[in-house]
Length: 211
Ligand SMILES: [Zn+2]
Image (tube, rainbow, N blue to C red):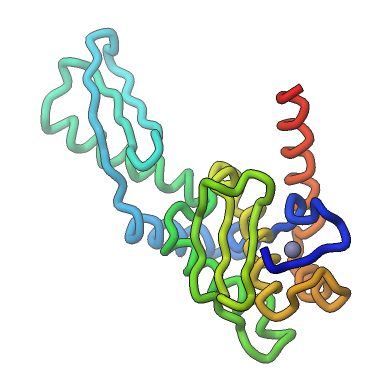
């Protein structure tokens, strides 16, 4: 919000890089983090039409597990544990951090990894939160209050895209404008261009739908 840009729509292209994709240990770290931070609600639905197949998927903060009507309680327990673990593992490979706490942890990692080597310190925000009232921009930063907000529209996006936006907003903590120095800070992120392209494409598709 406090930031000014040469390009008015620059927030739509602001974004980050994937810790998960480029660190071999990333997936493991994240799945344990998610399990700890999230422990999602689990709903089991029995279906008479299902004979053997079991499946699970996420609906907002809940993981829904579908099982056959006649499955035993013992089998149910085993399958539910297994399927919930699989959904979480899949999300940890592809999805953005889901809760505000996970977002704050990720911000700390990104700052340490990409900004600290350049600045000699890792800038930390006072808060990082998902917000639902931000539909024109992907992310925003108020440097005076050291707060960062990310649009909930990015929640289904790959983590490397959300990381880019998060790093972009973290860089605004030390450089409020989109100056050369700002872009130097942000462009160390290896997927910077790719993430900006992803967001531009997403935005373009969304505006076509509205027509
Ligand atoms: Zn910006």
